[in-house]
Image 1 (tube, helix red, strand yellow):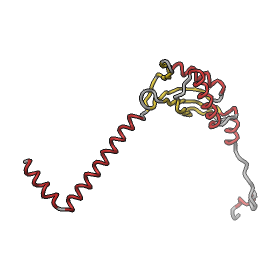
Image 2 (cartoon, helix red, strand yellow; image 1 turned 30 degrees about the vertical axis):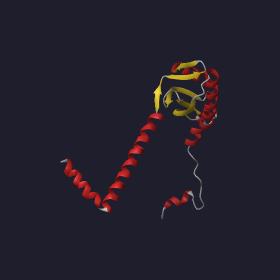
Image 3 (tube, helix red, strand yellow; image 1 turned 60 degrees about the vertical axis):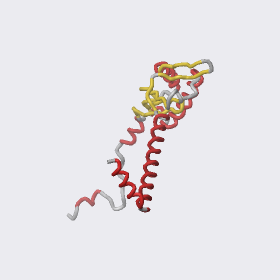
Image 4 (cartoon, helix red, strand yellow; image 1 turned 45 degrees about the vertical axis):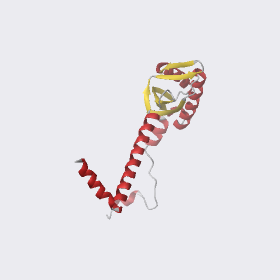
Length: 182
């Protein structure tokens, strides 16, 4: 059987077209396998996974901060932003060995105090980065995402938008034209 396959491939590769075709096919397979290998390595290197601990490395060891402590600290920092109400904090670890962290804050927003959500969330992110680096020396926090879960609009603006509008009188419009040919 093995001899028969050897003879078949020997005859097949004697033709230039066939040998070029097989070489091209082999090169394509090698490139595909290389990309699959690189993708696998990158997925494991830069994956994000949920965690309940935040690890801060120092010169003499590491500090491990629980998610509950982090939630309390974030809640304390958010007191300066009364328009935002914190519902949930999720910690995601980027890569292995505590390379970096990603916080996801699920918040509610109350627009009745006149702030806009983008401005308020931007100021809140800056304040959180500063507070966490000052309080716990967390320097491996890469980003903070704010998910708007609950929105309470300004009631005066909503009532104004929903108020019945006055009919604009157009030229030629009058109450007597409703007779319709009488």
